Length: 280
Image (tube, rainbow, N blue to C red; front, side, top):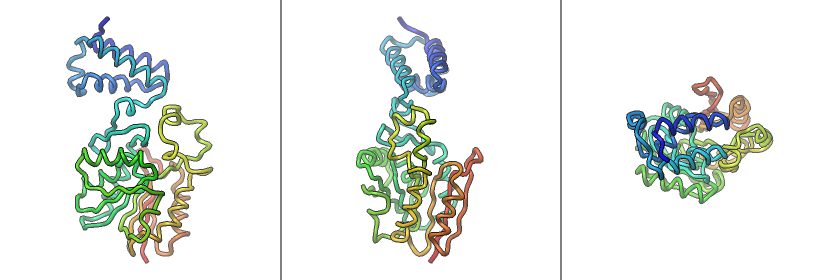
């Protein structure tokens, strides 16, 4: 039995809504399976899906209802105007992290600065910074080699020259000096797992999500390790969880004598980034 595209979308939207999933997921999955752009899809709404396409579409919708994120089903996510490959070894890039890239670029000039992205995951931050400002010398690390495979592939596909290193936080870079250190580290308190969607907790890597009882474990570790790797004048930028701004700012103030700290809100008005200018 075949269905017209609009009929398939209506079924998916209704099914997804009943399952408390995002109704928009149906359109994303249908575009992926048909290979159509949004404009093409809406221009062909009265066309019939082939039986194999319909079968794949229905299976994909059922998979999302069970909890698999749409991005893992289609294998990609848009970030800063580019398409990044993702799988269950990396965190799905979020719009909030696009703001971290934007705010970082605002704070660095066109000089040939040495920049490192810690906990790179899919490579979205490092690759975006390099492609937006090619004069930067970009390094990126992750504790998991499986994540770095994804990041390397994204850098290759997007033609970004990044030096990837496997290792725990700043340890691989001891002895080097960076002008800019950027990170979107794990920052969710472990107790929050009880209230989070299974779409996140059962599929995205926990190593990229959770950070101790208060969510601040990684920021504390950064404060211990940063002095080993920052240049005499350096910029450090972190993504943070909403409500963590003052706590992370205090960590900087207690750890460094000469530091200027900014807490930046995201587009939704929540504190989402902390930037610190550190000088000797």
